[in-house]
Image 1: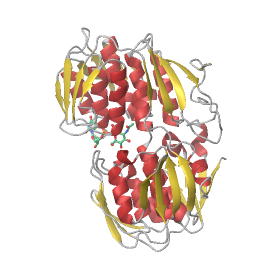
Image 2 (image 1 turned 120 degrees about the horizontal axis):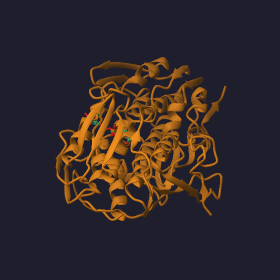
Image 3 (image 1 turned 90 degrees about the vertical axis):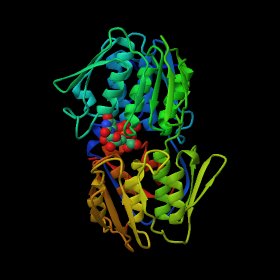
Image 4 (image 1 turned 45 degrees about the vertical axis):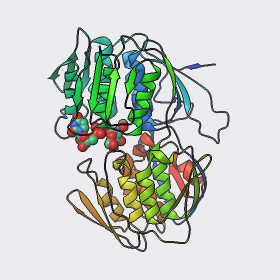
Length: 454
Ligand code: UD1
């Protein structure tokens, strides 16, 4: 039986458990470092696939059923935005065993789009919500969507999204920080060549192209597995797409898409994060449901650092016993390279390596906010332009640190797990955006970690 929560306060309780960005804003995570990790960690559905898949539901009046949806603050926030456009949601498949984490099954139905506006108050909180633009223009012929973070072109650009949608025939103006788009006669397929790899722009154009007339070819498309997951779902909905997983996508649009059933792929960033935690603390953990093929570059780096990685029947096993952590230098790259979303965590691991490593960030400027917090824990890190040199230290020491963004905050958790004494990570709401019950998953493997609410 389904549970109709379409008129409930989704942000407060989607799955019957409380995850609320506002209420968790004052929570802290306390860690006593030094415990090895042993056991099993279930890997949740991927946040970065779940978000665009939820948005995909806007493309059809029929029901899209998504399985393995993670319970995250970002998911709940996006649902609020989508409800504003007219989406109805029912959830079923209650957890049979509370000690497991099978993701929830969402039934999403956007029979009528009642509002084609996505206002600043909503979009500003989460960049991915900007991806409603393509589907709204494609289905309704118009949309008004606030630019993420306000007047964002430049520092947080969406130029590639807009250029791609223009190529499909959308007329686009900027008005008071909003993107105002119109395509009264619908969109028409075209060739879109991205000068730079962008996950978001690829998804926005892919979603729009699925309802455009004729064929769209996206060149230099992002190859991230989450893009592939969205494309696979679109195929189930009736779109014809070739080249999934490659950098050239051929999309044959349809006049109307149908409903479908799709399961969100496992979260490779959560997988890599826990793998790095095990490599940092030592121990032996099976990451249940994880897939090696989604994260080869990061697993290669972990192998070089001294972790043993193997595929098991249920997932991926990560071990480090006895040996220290060898220094490994990496550079972030679009998929299949080393993911930028694991850069901070890898730096946490390298902080205690037996030697010096260099980490270069090539995707985002300024993605080094975790450095000063890791230094508070005793790490020896020097920044120079887009690179950081990390001289491994024998010991980190517990301290008060501040989470600054989603991935940065979890690097502090990894460092805290290996530090002597107590580490407190403040501003935990960043973690709740992307990690499902992190402290529970880690403590069940022996970590001394707890959430403290004021
Ligand atoms: C997505 C992921 C994020 C990940 C990132 C890179 C989600 C919800 N977020 O973010 O976790 O870190 O991919 O793997 O899936 N750019 C432009 N113009 C644009 C768009 C992007 O110049 O119009 C630039 C960005 O500033 C950045 C680079 O392209 O330097 C890559 O960004 P992009 O792949 O678009 O990241 P997101 O889709 O926002």
